Length: 342
View 1 (spheres, rainbow, N blue to C red):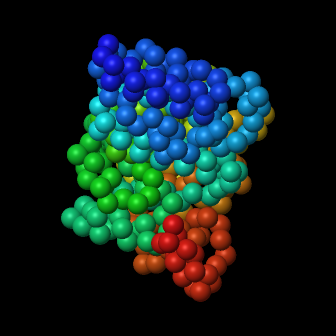
View 2: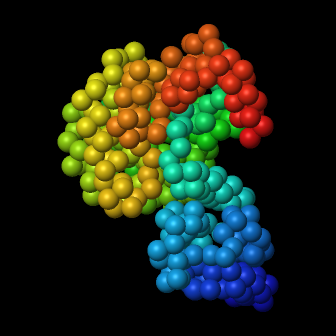
């Protein structure tokens, strides 16, 4: 090991030890190979806004702070192993910060109502213009439906389109993988998005894939289709940041909302409260003002809607209605201006 590398490693170790009190991050750093570039030191921690730190500090075990155990939740060792090149480090800082903000919002605002327009309903000939218009109208997230023609009987778009959207989007990108091999493909999306949701019905290592998604710096979601028993998701509720309850059969838009799926939403809310968990409950399929109210009452807080938003004459009003707000035109204009300044 050369002296320069030793100095870089020692400096990073010192900053981490000071910031985190305990040693899990430092221990991961010590496993790094020879010749790696570790010039960012404590600035990494400052960029992530995680000082004072968390990790194995027993004083923070029962702490509900938004940053509590954040590195542990998202894959601590993956961050350390990704330090060899500054470009990768920069990407990691960016995506850990983005995912951190998503988790912070969920915890500090007690599962706020989030309207999540589905990009699949946009005009793809005017992709940027249409998405920007919806963002300015008040979208909280943008929902990306990825279909492979195998898990569902439809094909949508893939990583190149997602990368394109990430270049102009100003809202978090929520990616729904309706594909047979999420374990194989998720890394092709994680550099560009904030959340990746896989289906519990896939025949892959679900727990391992969820860990992998978090390890890449994204939050992880799990989706369940209408025919699937709710018991399938039970082992994973403490490993996710979002549970997507499909309220139609996945694969096609324009289907009618299935009210019987609300039992899953209700159970998810009950278990989240009983186990003191923090995940979002998202619904997707046939969502309009009336069905959104039904889903809200059952416990959902994230609402995916496509045509009803992108094709609306006044998308700001439509999104306000999905939130359950009884607003006047002046109220909607005020909300639109507030969201544009975020």
